[in-house]
Amino acid sequence: MAVYRAVLPEFRSGSLWIALALIAFSLVGLYLRLFTDYANLHRYVHYIVDKTHLDYELSIPMFYTGLLLLASSVLLLIISTMKESTRFLRRRWSILSIIFLGLALDEGTSFHEFLNVNTLQAYAPTSKCLRWTWVIPYGVFTSMVFIWHVPFLRSLPRRTAGLLLAGALYVGGAMGVELIGSAFYTVQGSQSLGYGMTTHVKEFLEMIGLIMFIYGLLDYLMSIRWVITLQHTLQADRASQLSDTQGLH
Image (cartoon, rainbow, N blue to C red):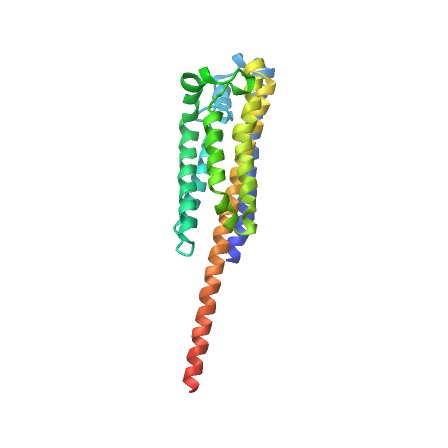
């Protein structure tokens, strides 16, 4: 168990460095697009910039975020299958696993963008912050999931409170900063410093939130395993003592 405990900080620092590296590469690309003669740069530079840009489809940062979401789903599924948990907890862990799997698929397919033009946009209130109206149904869904899971969250150990902070960072980045980015996009356009920087803040908060969430799940899983191992050890010691006592008689 001590070995697994030692791995947790390594995972956190390694994942964080990857996120920072992706942000740095994307910022370099943002600088090249805004402050250089980008159109005349070599096509290989265009390719690298596109593949490292945080807001482009099929880019490396998008793949990394999708991988973090998928890892979260798998860990939630593993926790939900633990027989030591109550039926109530297993059901809630399973539902969260399905939700994160859906988020991983959405990250790869950008399904939420289909909710912008053809459906809700015509009925959204006139606001610079609501250019991307997918935040409305997603915000309602997130609020419902949170309220429904309040009893579940209260039943968790206090040390898992970091999961709430991780969720707040992810949702704050995915939807909160998205509203700010929408305003910059509406006023200044996509090729502006304001929109570019809000996009980077948004994606960074999502990555940090997911890294913290995975760390919290791993810590919770290992703590449960430690308790189970301790219980089995105590039971074995008691059985051995009882056997020794009976042998003396």
